[in-house]
Length: 202
Image (cartoon, rainbow, N blue to C red; front, side, top):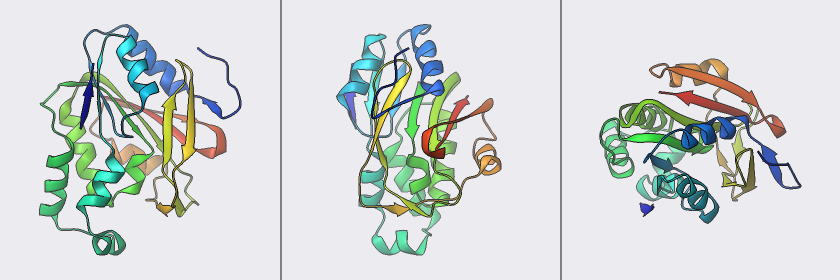
């Protein structure tokens, strides 16, 4: 894990209402611990630290594919103990110590039980009022390449595919609400390419 201390849309960018809400949250808060599950990107680091916060980056997909064997991933199941070990090795934060989470589209690429366990761990790690940004592929998509997300400014993101394609879990609006049922609120936005953008408040 690595630690480091409203724009106009152009080609290759997409506007993000969730990011605008997150930017306001960062601007109105002090000394937050922000977690980026998409791995360390210089643009994201610069964006978060410009508000005076700390960024912890974890490449969730790489960690997941290193931890679970191809057979476990192909079978779509793993022992509860193994999932617990994965969560312990990936999310190492104290209770109520995290002020914001950039989950991006990563939650769909895990085993369903691993996603459930990860969200449960984040629920305990996030402070009251903390925000989480997540993206979900449309229901009809069975496989996709994880997107590399970079923050352009307070209103725009750039997202580029990182092949190869991987199976994605099915999360419609009701399934997303169930996934975050222990949180304070879930707000949905529709973005380009039918990608579902979600803002979750702890």
